[in-house]
Image 1 (cartoon, rainbow, N blue to C red):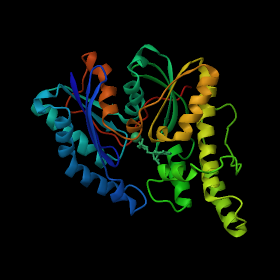
Image 2 (cartoon, rainbow, N blue to C red; image 1 turned 45 degrees about the horizontal axis):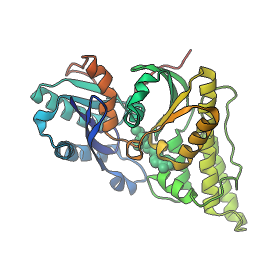
Image 3 (tube, rainbow, N blue to C red; image 1 turned 120 degrees about the horizontal axis):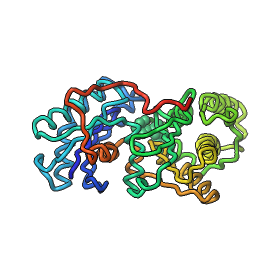
Length: 340
Ligand code: KG4
Ligand code: ZN
């Protein structure tokens, strides 16, 4: 079965072909990052218009890469929640039109569920390892989920203010680095000393929640003081590395605590921040120390892509389930409720 995935929830127009055994036959991502860079962030109206221009060419390109034509598509999976509403509607409308004309089943996919399934693309045997613990850290979300089966999620912790990716992006802006900030800040941090500045970590008692807004304020204050001091002892690289360390420490330590609390030994990480090398190193070290199995997505499937969306639809399609063509699109909708 060849599943066409379509993703247009933010500023990437993406399409992919994935099989029911989670083999990625092709994946095309047309990023709009350069267009939005001059505004310092994603402009929803611009994003929607670009998706309209690009969605069908991207679908045609992914079909060509997989050596298929439209008749080779057996099912369609499309992100229908959450995200920029205008942007989502472009992908959903294109997907519905294709499903109608090709007479194939269609499945609406939650974007966060898609991110979680980027781990199943790296290791399809994860399906035999439930329960698993998953950290989602992206530009808009930072959450820890317990996953007991396909489609069965419990939210254990979430950010109370900024998302981890947002903390990277806002921090990058304070350094005067261009959008997208996360990867640029991480590059600056590469040669710095992560212990140079002791930025605060908000542990929030026993909670598995996160808070990053205080950290961002400390960075702003530190940079102002540093400018006044100008003793040259602490470099920009050191400050960036210390800031990155504070974010990745919080993510890794909360995952460790969640694993102990839930007695779960299989951990995964998803979302754009999973592309961060320091986070990967820290998670790998923590899991090795505790004897946990760690699965992380391949680099190209950390940030938004359509292969993860097609992958998330596989369990439902294999169970013979799909959505009616009238299914809706939502700007916001939680994947799961917080454990009460
Ligand atoms: O998952 P994603 O592509 O889009 C959302 O659904 O939000 O995540 C994008 C986020 C941005 O905040 C970006 O700065 C961050 O992921 N990010 C990184 C890195 N690569 C992307 N943050 C830190 N280090 C990276 N290497
Ligand atoms: Zn995303």
